[in-house]
Length: 485
Image (tube, rainbow, N blue to C red; front, side):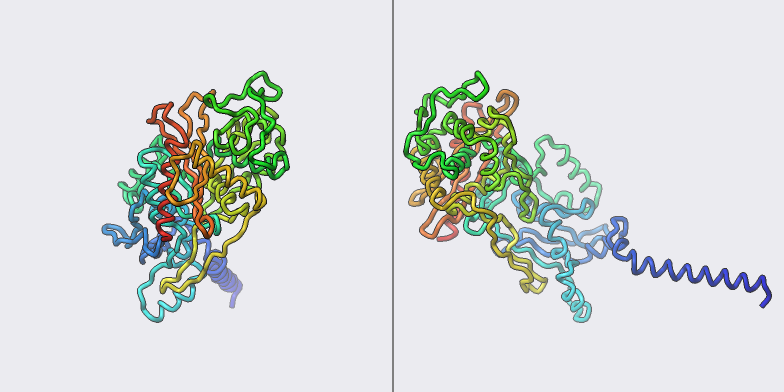
């Protein structure tokens, strides 16, 4: 072979080698990257070529799949009572991806997860119709309905837990939205989603998990727990060292109580019953900022919570003495999610043990075989059983004789705490109405609830935890109790 031909042969050999290297690089090294690339439409077409698995509540699906027309995506997601369940499920859209359970459990629901590899392989040989697996939740349909309908047109949120296991029984947020309206990939879907994003009331915000509020007087149960745990007081019926009026430390300002209530040197029981700011503000100051941060942390403040959907961290602030006193009554920079305050109520109801909140009970393969079951887990022990039972007595007095009487349930022991949290600079906005509670039976407490209401339509004087939030909590607790009969 002459020299020019040899050079051409070598050059062609290099080109063939480069092509082989490039092909193998794409097929093996970048295969996963290309398969998951958002611009790879073939992957998306395959993703929506079969029905998605369902999210299950009380044995029934709250989701479904329907065939589409005029698109190369064959199936799209639909919801039953979408606005009620959106805070639980999130959305799944052909154009805008997914959120919450629809996103976090996508591997099971889409059928593409590693746990379902055997099922996918088997269906190739059997010719069976391919579908996704199911996610079985801990939610109680009756409790969720009671929470959603109780909130109605008001802006707010409800979180309900089983104190003994941590199972989430209800998770409602209003105003809400129907994920079905933008589940496709048409211009109409895009317009519907943009309308929701532009809504000033933020219907796509999950207020139960992703909004933090000043917890107001509901936080006083944490401050009472701190007083008992740190030995500041031990007898809930003995007088406290609480002058009236009480001047905030390092300040000329006096901490006020609502109305003419008997708060001077009030016992812990009476202070919670009448919601005495002076008593609990002074307790927070007597204990100091570090001990208050420590006690709040035992209840879960300062940490994000994964249910598996992430809940924002609640915050008890590191602050100066006057602000710490105000934080001890749920004001200043103290901020909590409704889920966090439900965790507080549940730990007290469960004799001091705080269980990890969760909402996925099982994962199922397409043939309904169970491939995962949740094991309950204790997060912490914020207070001893003895002290938890003392706080229970105090909270039960609130419902029987105090500000929470509208949460009473005939024949059932109910403990609770109302809260009306200031909102805006110098309390210029309408306040938030709070209520936290639990119900007890002979076998312990099956439900703890936190409710927050941002009712911009109500008259300012009508806004109270006992008036707006407690009736909602009562209906949720009653729904859970009725389901256990």
